[in-house]
Length: 197
Image (cartoon, one colour):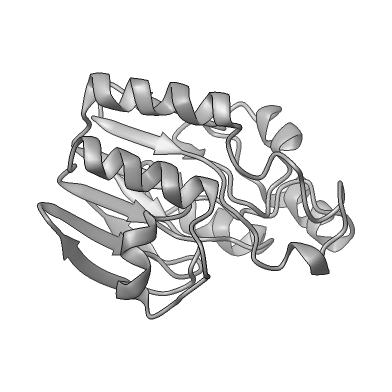
């Protein structure tokens, strides 16, 4: 499976990239639902082929994502691929954004969704995690500090406590890095970076 980092509205480049891949999961921050030229590019170039699935990031409109037929969902488990996915993240820059235009209150899973996701995660104990953000304990490996844990990074920490998958692939932090925590190999992806697992 190929995994792709943030797109940030570069839909034409993303479209060209997917045409070279047999199948992929894009890890959020596609910029779905943004206005202006980004919306035009999305309409022209966004591939809705079911081979090119995606989760949402904090810079995607949840409602608009849910209308796309190749949106995986807010969280879930792909039995065939043994991949668990979690959409969303917390925006450190939300004060600079406009509610309902470039920032959405549903950017993170609700507490109820997070609880349900954790129960499912414990049940399936996946081999691979595909998320937009990473567990908070992974942040030092990225050279960043965002203060206290947010709801998403805390949920991902709790999942890592329950079971350590073999692989954890994520985007959100705009860098290419590999590191290991316990038994789990983490792979961070920069904008439009591709990783084949």
